[in-house]
Amino acid sequence: MAFAEVNGQRLYYEDTGGTGPVVVFSHGLLMDHDMFAPQVSAFRDRFRCITWDERGHGLTAVAQPEPFSYYDSADDLAALLTHLGVEKAVLVGMSQGGFLSLRCALTHPDRVVGLVMLDSQAGTEQEEKLPLYQQLISSFMEQGLTPEVGTTIANIILGSDYPDSEHWKEKWKTMSAANIGNNFQTLASRDDLTERLSEVSQPTLIIHGDADIAIPMERAQMMADKIPDAELVAIPGAGHAANLSHPDPVNQALKKFLGRLFSGG
Image (cartoon, rainbow, N blue to C red; front, top):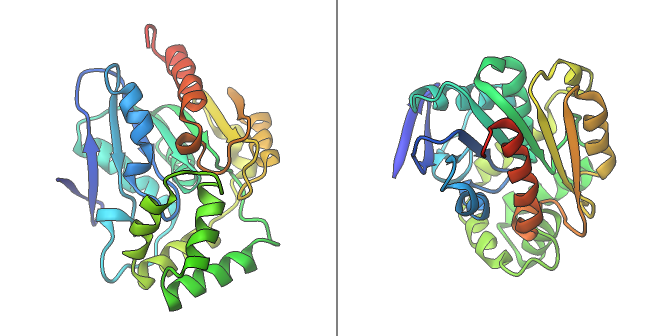
């Protein structure tokens, strides 16, 4: 197992190596590096694929987490690139991973070749959803992953028809209440970057499931309208983790975008 001691953190990562262009995949809330297995498998022959566990998640999680922001996570990502000797990379971020990847593109623009926002957004959570999420997280912290809590979380992130939700439920059972609460606080308190989207200088691909119940398609369209060089690809029937539930159309969109960035990609 590989860890990078950077930015005051001990980040777990996986790196396929090779000499191809670098693509870094950043996961969503409650997920980990493993959620990008369908993409790493599809692209590792032509690209150097890096996945990692963000603060409070997977093998990076610590027993006593400290408060952090997604700007801290963006700095973690930039420091990880430096640790691995990577000058520039394409950043692919799903939901929370998109929050930090967008901030990395804004605060470390020289490190980012292209940006992919996957089922993500620039704004804050919808006000009407926050109380429901807070109640769900509180139940998760106090009672553990009960069948009801597990099913609700799986439906939001993976969709009700996702065949391998038990794999993720087993991972969620191992998460500590301290990390669950700290991670959610970071998500709920993040700033709104809508007015800064015009500053995004990198070519950007926005991939969004048209059945995403966590982040509405309108948020994806808004990003596409405000980022100067952006393209929106809707994935029919896909929910919040389109790369897991609908890997083929997501990978097709990624392949086209990477081909645009790198001749022969």
